[in-house]
Image (cartoon, rainbow, N blue to C red; front, side, top):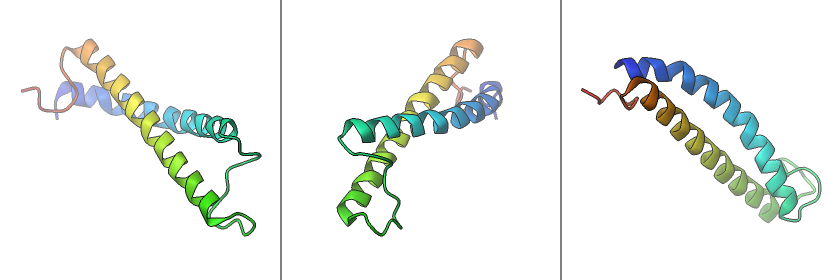
Length: 92
C-alpha cells in the first residue's frame, strides 16, 4: 500500500462515520420536502403501503450513495493534495 493510501485510511474512516450522520439528516429532510409527513416507513410498518416503503428505500439508498461518493471524493482530493499522490495505491 502506498503512503497516500495509508494516510487515506483514517481519513476515510472518519469521513465514513460523518457521512452516515449527514446522509441520515439529508434523507429525513428530503423525505419531508417530498411531501411526506412524519418519519420514513420501515419495511415492517404494517400500516404503510408497498409503494411508500419501496419509494422510501430507493430514496434513502440514493441519498446515502450520493453523500458517500461526495465525501469519499472530497477525502481523496484532500489526501492527494496533502501527499502529492492520489490515494489508490496505483501511484507507482
